[in-house]
Length: 585
Ligand SMILES: Cc1cc2nc3c(=O)[nH]c(=O)nc-3n(C[C@H](O)[C@H](O)[C@H](O)COP(=O)(O)OP(=O)(O)OC[C@H]3O[C@@H](n4cnc5c(N)ncnc54)[C@H](O)[C@@H]3O)c2cc1C
Ligand SMILES: *[C@@H]1O[C@H](CO)[C@@H](O)[C@H](O)[C@H]1NC(C)=O
Ligand SMILES: *[C@@H]1O[C@H](CO)[C@@H](O)[C@H](O)[C@H]1NC(C)=O
Ligand SMILES: *[C@@H]1O[C@H](CO)[C@@H](O)[C@H](O)[C@H]1NC(C)=O
Ligand SMILES: *[C@@H]1O[C@H](CO)[C@@H](O)[C@H](O)[C@H]1NC(C)=O
Ligand SMILES: *[C@@H]1O[C@H](CO)[C@@H](O)[C@H](O)[C@H]1NC(C)=O
Ligand SMILES: *[C@@H]1O[C@H](CO)[C@@H](O)[C@H](O)[C@H]1NC(C)=O
Ligand SMILES: *[C@@H]1O[C@H](CO)[C@@H](O)[C@H](O)[C@H]1NC(C)=O
Ligand SMILES: *[C@@H]1O[C@H](CO)[C@@H](O)[C@H](O)[C@H]1NC(C)=O
Image (cartoon, rainbow, N blue to C red):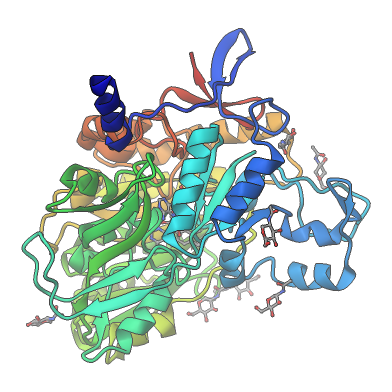
C-alpha cells in the first residue's frame, strides 16, 4: 500500500515533460496511418463545456475566432455579420502594419491565412476561417498562457502562439487550432547593471513577450543615460517571440551581433505547463536552444532579458539608383554590383543596410553606421563612390548624422505594409562566398528577381564582425555573414491548391535555386526563408541541428508546440489540403 502511494505521489510531482496526450485520434489518409490532433467534427474535439471551463480559467479572455473582415460578408458560419461601417473601417486598416499586429489572429503576410475572408465589396461571397485558429486566448497573465498550453496538451488540440503575426511562413496561425495571443505582455524593466548568472554586468532590460521593436527602442531612449537594444529593422516586429528564437537581425547587429546573442535569461512555460527560467545557470540547455533554435519549438516565452548598449551618435547614408538616374539595365546592374560586392567592407566597419532591390532600382535606405560620424561613414563608402564615378554610373548617395541611433531609426526606417500575398524564400551570403563569387551572387540575384517578378528585400548584416562570440543555436555561418536577402514570389489571392503547390516548387527551384547555387558556404534563415527549403535542417541550423533535435525530444517530446521546419518536426505532416496536423504512425 505504502509503496503504491509514494509511487503515485512521486509521479504527481515529477516534472512531467513526458506526459502523453490523453486523446488519441488515429485516422487513415492516402494509405497512411496517422495520429492527428483533434479537429472540429472529430469525436475527440473538446466539448462546449470544456471550452467554457477553459474560458473561466483564463479570466474570460477566450474568444471564438471571427475573421476581421466577416463584417464585409452577409454571414459567417451561418450567423449574420454584415456591417457596412465596420467593413469600411476594417478594410481601411487592411494594409496598416501596427493595427494588424494588434488584432487577435491576423497575419501581416496573408498567404498562410488561406485568404478565405478578405475585404470585399461583394457581401454575398463566402467568408470562412481558412487556416486561422478556431479559438484564441487573448492572454493577460502568464496563468492564461499556462492554461492554454495545458488545455492543448490534455485535449490533443493544435496549439499556436501568436505574438505580432509577422511570421512570413504562417507559423503564427494554423487550421483548427487554439491560439494564445501574447501581444498584451508589454512589461519593460531596465537595469544599469545585470546581476544574474552568466558573468555579464552591463545594462539589461527585461521585457514581456509582446513588446515590439520601436516601442522598446523608444523606452530605451527615455532612460538616463539613453540605451539601445538589438531589434529588427521593422518597427513592429516582436523581440521576445519568433524574432529572437529564430536569431533576429537588425540595424545594430553588425556591431553587437544577432538578437539571440544578447539574451541573458528567459522566463518560459514548457510543454508540460511548468514555469521555468532558462539562463546560464538554470536549464542551460533550454537557454541555448531558445537562442536561435526555432520559434514555438521548445517553450512559450513569457519574458526575456537582453543586453542594452549605451546610445551613441550614428551616421546614415541613403544610396539609390533608379529610373531618375538611368534606364540602362546594364549600367544599373554595374552600380548595384559595386554596392553589393563591398558587403564585406560594410560589415567589417559595423555597418548594416536595409535595401529594396527591384528591377532597375535599388533603394538602400538606410545604411547605418553606429558610433560613427557622417565624415567617417563617407570615408568607409569612398570605394563605392569612386567606382560609381569612374564607371560613370548615375546615382544618389546622401549622408546624415544623428546624435543617437534612435533619432536615425525614426528618421530613416519606416512602417511597412501588411496585407501582402506572397511566398517568401531567402539566402544568407557569407563573406567567404562574396569574396569568392561576389559577381556570381549578384548575377544570381538578378536571375532570382527575373523569376520572382518582384524583387529582393536585402540586408547588409554581419553579426560576427565585432560582437563577442556567443554559444547559441543560430547557424554558425551567421558568424561569417555579410548579406542576407529575402526573395518573394507574388501570388494571386484566388490561386487553387494545385497552383499554390506549383508556386512553391517554382519558388524553390527558380527563385531561390540561383541564390543557393551561387553561395555554397551560405545558409538560410528560419524566420525569413522557404518552407520547402531543401535539407532545411542543415540550411537553417548547420552543425547545431543534431543537438536541437535532441533538445526538442527532451523538452517537447509529444509535439505540443509546432511550427513547420523547426527542430524535431520531421514526423509531423499537415495533411488534407493544409488542414490536419498529424504524425505518421
Ligand atoms: C515586415 C517584416 C519585417 C521583418 N523584419 C525583420 C528584421 O528586421 N529582422 C529579423 O530578424 N526578422 C524580421 N522579420 C521576420 C521576423 O523575425 C519573423 O517574422 C518572426 O517570426 C516574428 O516574430 P513575432 O513573434 O513578432 O511574430 P509572430 O508571427 O507572432 O510569431 C512568429 C513565430 O514565433 C512564435 N512565437 C511567437 N511568440 C512566441 C512566444 N512568446 N513563445 C514562443 N514562440 C512564440 C509563433 O508561434 C510563430 O511560430 C520581419 C518580418 C516582417 C513581416
Ligand atoms: C468567455 O467569457 C467572456 C466573458 O464572460 C465572454 O465575453 C466570451 O464570449 C467567452 N468566450 C467564449 C468562447 O465563450
Ligand atoms: C482602424 O484603425 C484606426 C486607428 O488606427 C482605429 O481607430 C479604427 O478603430 C480601426 N478600425 C477597426 C475596424 O478596428
Ligand atoms: C484553402 O485554399 C484552397 C485553395 O487554394 C482550397 O482548396 C482549400 O479548400 C482551402 N482550405 C481551407 C481550410 O480554407
Ligand atoms: C529615385 O531616387 C531618387 C533620388 O534619391 C528619389 O528622389 C526618387 O524618389 C526615386 N524614385 C523611385 C521611383 O524610387
Ligand atoms: C527613364 O524613363 C522614364 C519613363 O520613360 C523617364 O521618365 C525618365 O526620365 C527616364 N530616365 C532617364 C535617366 O532618362
Ligand atoms: C564608440 O567608439 C569609441 C571609440 O571610437 C569607443 O571608445 C566607444 O566605446 C564606442 N561606443 C560604443 C557605444 O560602442
Ligand atoms: C567583386 O569582388 C571580387 C572579389 O573581391 C572581385 O574578384 C571582382 O572583380 C569584383 N567585381 C567587381 C565588379 O568589382
Ligand atoms: C483569379 O482571378 C483572375 C483575375 O480576376 C482571373 O484571371 C483568374 O482566372 C482567377 N483564377 C482562378 C483560379 O479562379
